[in-house]
Image (cartoon, rainbow, N blue to C red; front, side, top):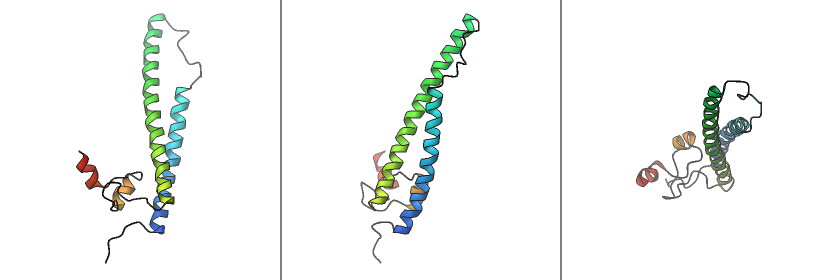
Amino acid sequence: MAEKTRYSDEELAEFKAIILEKLENAKHDYKMLRNALDQSDNNDTNDTSPTFKVLEEGASVFSKEQSGRLAQRQEKFIEHLEAALIRIQNKTYGICRETGKLISKERLKAVPHATLSIEAKNSQL
């Protein structure tokens, strides 16, 4: 029996459902992070003592920086998931970009935007 060179349409549909669910969750999380960055609730420290205000502003800046980094990571994750949907549409999803062999289903279920098989990924280390 010849080795499979691509996943069947049924398998691709299964992966698409997984990716769409992850994409929806990722977009929701991204929106929450962006809202945290753009927050204008006026819950600031204007009515507190000057010492406390300095501490609070430092914590606020740190929190915004952290939220900004998380938002950037989430945005990149969304881009990878959207690229995976394009690969499904092109029927090239699940093919390792280094070896040309199929990436295992287990890996794709865990990391649905993967473009490298475990073997290829380990050879990069």
